Image (cartoon, rainbow over all chains, first blue to last red; front, side, top):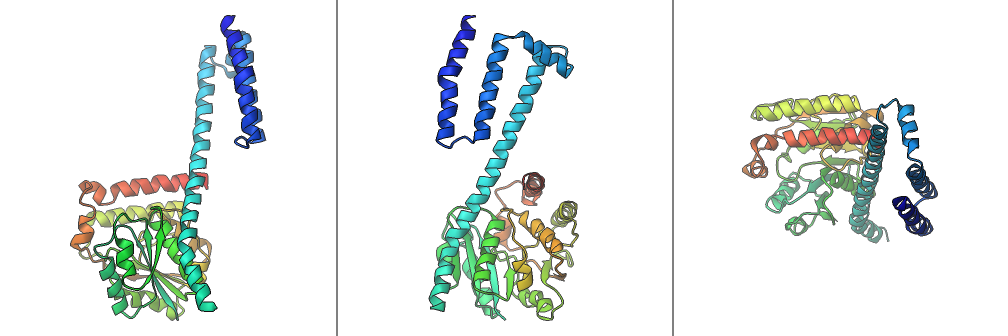
Length: 116
Length: 231
């Protein structure tokens, strides 16, 4: 019971305000904030009602309910990894375009000089 | 007809000056060198010849540098663009052969193919090129004899209708895909590659197999798969 209270207070006092301030500072989108809040609320429900894990296991057709959590975690990690890969790709493209913009400045300047 | 020669260069201080003067000797004065964030004096060496030298502050790869060169030529209103390697592997005498089909109005893009005359070419290189051609065909649906050749000529219609986003060597394949989609006319002409001691030594630090392009080939396939997933 003590651990459940500590985690609940931790989530309510630190994590949820942190999500809110990240959203205010525009580090998180509205969708991202809702997703994170949902994630932590589900976490809290599971902590207070552990028998629900058994339900998830049954729903997924997995014998041991803990396996269901492992599978869900793998899916989540893959999703996070995919998001990171997409973000890195986007950044890489932006770096290239920035590089190009900087290097083409001289050409544009030269062209302006010739036309004036 | 304004013809611009584009040389993407990375750490080529030893040969870049010679490559530029060899091209100038063939009567081409419009040369754009794109120094792709070199760690050596490539920029200074190229600048000393009086040609246009652009500088990528960060190394982004041959594909990115070539596209920057194409963008610069576009700004300078080029009629024909020729892309070449800056390590001296391509013979400037072949430029004329490359742009002739464009001047004759027979092609929009001309590829200088090493595979139409493989005499003197290492066998492993021939195999790797053939694999690259198949990979290009699988990903972009276009089959040419030398999909990885960097010695190419484009007319205005061609270079204004393509824009590559892939930074490394796989951009050659991406470019071919765009050429196909834009329904441009392609012609291949045989070219002779000069395998100098310099170009051979460039890959000396790598193992024999990676030097033959195996590692680059695998990386290229991975990037092509990623690109088809994350575009």
